[in-house]
Length: 126
Image 1 (tube, one colour):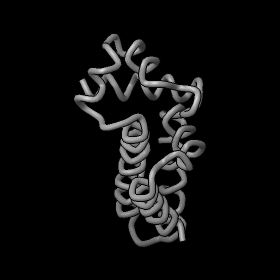
Image 2 (cartoon, rainbow, N blue to C red; image 1 turned 90 degrees about the vertical axis):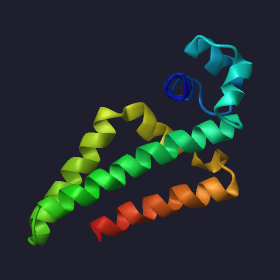
Image 3 (tube, rainbow, N blue to C red; image 1 turned 45 degrees about the vertical axis):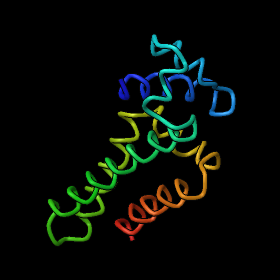
């Protein structure tokens, strides 16, 4: 059920933006009552945080693996990182757009966690 909620929320937020999307929109897209969403997520902001974190964790994990698999050559590492970074963003454009445009809507703790993963991704490149 949580995966269905996240898919519905991703579609709604990608199309309408976080502030233009309400819990009823997400419920309708997911084919469930809006009240049932609260059995899985505390709030719309919690759903946004989950979307952003899930994407960033996958990106960082895949990027770390790509860099390690590239060996010791810095150029090969950079090529692998760029290919992985661009590939994931191309494969998941809605999640990437949400992660880039909607983070200002997160609460302090969620924002800090997301930024920590973004910083980790940036350090891979530096």
